[in-house]
Image 1 (cartoon, rainbow, N blue to C red):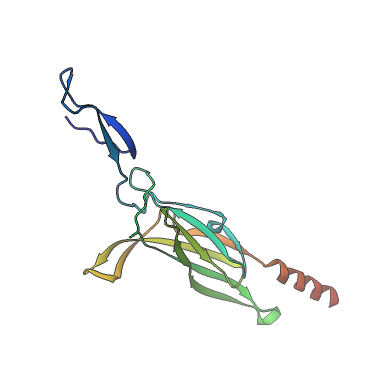
Image 2: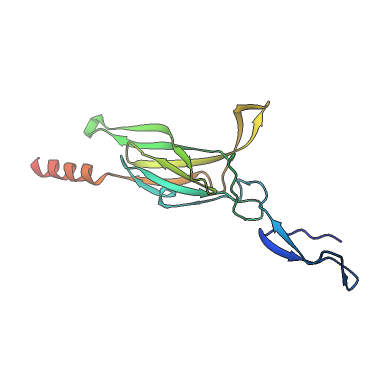
Length: 174
């Protein structure tokens, strides 16, 4: 007979032959999480859905294994890109400006990672989060990347309050 425990934790186990426990039973059994699975990682925070231009936005990624258990591996690696843009300029000089921004990724040392970015202009963006699943050709600089569950996230970057106020004052003077 066999049993596969998918929930991490400390358990007390007893193995029996018929009705009789084997010598040494019961014993303590520590079940550790499996390897990090990007399809089960979770992203949390307002920075997944909205932000303000020229202001730092952030979100947190919680690493999880294929069973949903939190993981904590010092070798986990993530990267994130913000792609999109919006209108810049005024009047006839206005045009749509597109960009791709590499977000900052910081390990918090507890199985979570903080992703932060600062969009330069208001507009619509797509935030792509990826997890490094393997090295290619044993080269640590050459990684294979897989999207985190739910990625890319669609977000809206709102105008900065200071800019809105200056535009309102300029409109009043005109």
